[in-house]
Every structure is written in C-alpha cells, then in structure tokens.
Image 1 (cartoon, one colour):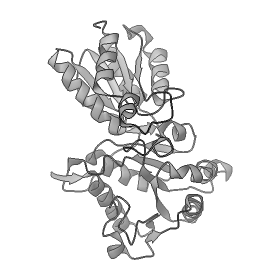
Image 2 (spheres, one colour; image 1 turned 90 degrees about the vertical axis):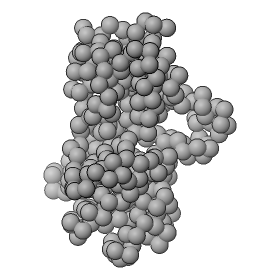
Image 3 (spheres, one colour; image 1 turned 120 degrees about the vertical axis):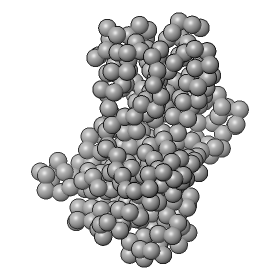
Length: 326
C-alpha cells in the first residue's frame, strides 16, 4: 500500500486506462497545457500528446457534445468540467443525448463516456458555484452517478467508469483533491453500485457519500465517546444505489440518519428514506432523520456557510433524536 492524494488517484486511474486502451482520451478546460485547473491531469499531455489530452474552449455544451459524438463512434472520452456548476450548460448533451441514446437508437449506440469534475461547495464561491448535483443527475435513467469520498474509492471507481459502456457522471470535490489515503500498489477496479460500510456499529445507521462522509465519520467518532456505536455507510454510487446494504444495516440497528450536502427536497436522502420505510418499516424504532444543506441558495458569508452545511453538531443531534437521547 502507498499514500497518494485524491488528485493523484484520479490521475493514476486515467493514466492506466489510457495506456490500456488507445480509445480513451481526456478533454476539457485547462486539462493539457495548464495540467488541469486542480492539477489532476498533471503530466498527462507530456505522455499522451495533444491528440489524447485536449484543451477545450470554455464552452461546456459544445465539448460535451463532441464527447458524446466521439463515444457513439467507438471512442471512450473522459470529459472534465472545471466544476459541475458550469456543466449546467452541458445538461442537454448529458441528459438528452448521452443518457437516452442507447434506448432511442434501439440498442445500436452505446455511449461509453465519463463526465467528471468538481461538485458541491468549495468555500466562498457563492450560490451559483456551490451546488451539489447528485440528485439532479441520479434522476435521469440511462446515467450512472458516482461520488467517491477517498482516494482508494476514487481510483477504483474511475477505472470502472471508464470501462463502463454507459455514460457515467463522476462527481468529485475541489476540497478533496488534496486529501490523502492509501491505495494498493497493483491495479484494482471497484464495482459500480456497491456501497461500503466504513465503520461497523449496532446502535444507529448513518448513510452518506462524497466529501460529507468526513462529517459522518467524525460525528461517529464523537458519538463513540458517549457509548453510541454508529454504523457508517458510504454509498459511493448514487445511481444505481445499493439499497440492500442500507436496509440490512437498518434491520440490525433499527435507526437511520442520512447525511448529504445537497438540498432536502427530492434528494438522495428522500430516496433512501422511502426505500427503508418500504422494505424495513417493521424494523424501525424511530422515524428516519435527514441532515442536509439548508433549503436556500448557498450563502457567501462564512458565518452563514457554517449554518447551511451538515456538521458534527447537527449529525450528533439527529442521532440522539432517533435514539431518544436528546
């Protein structure tokens, strides 16, 4: 095992897949000459050249469409958006072309493409640059949606996404690119659609994903000091969701708290809550509790940012609510 940064894990995944398959290429804003806005693609232009590591104009709809066309014609593009906030402009190509093409062509055209980039809040970037898009894209049949929380999962899942024959939305975070974690020396690929139990426990199940997993795990550590053992599940994949792992955990703990960075209405936590009440209702000893971003556009003031996002205090409060220990 060796320690790498999150950005290095992503780079290794892309490098290995580009060496393995000459059909794979990377395109996006500043990915080549500048080595990536967050240095994820550092050194890739030197190894693979300008035909496989391609700088694009700041025109997300245009280069996303080029990527979809390339995928339909046998290539396997990785399309990097500097941030998923900018990719709102490319939603037509992602939702109406990539996601629907297999069905609309009667199975004649696969679209093996990965759309990846920074997602969610990243500091004082204000409302239009601080949105989380997990639920937005998970709503769309034909897409797979992945949001890793650590370097190990990021590398293994990005390799799986690049090899997948369906379009994949791969959600990262600007605030995670410098995070460090251990990965194996050799090649590995993780299965899409399989959640991971990051911490075992018996008293309550906490479900989360992406960078908010840090909050979930930190809260679980604090709760353990009070004798409350939380089982913490990292969904990793948002579409398809591994409902079975969540339901089996709730059958053991009898309580559920879901933590996510996005807004509460029509959220991933709403979806999880539905499935648990549908398939584990008799095992619940308390209502499902959700901890989400406030139902407002994201603020710019640091004092309001802290109030808007899930934090340890809110998660601990939610756990104590479902345990009736408030």
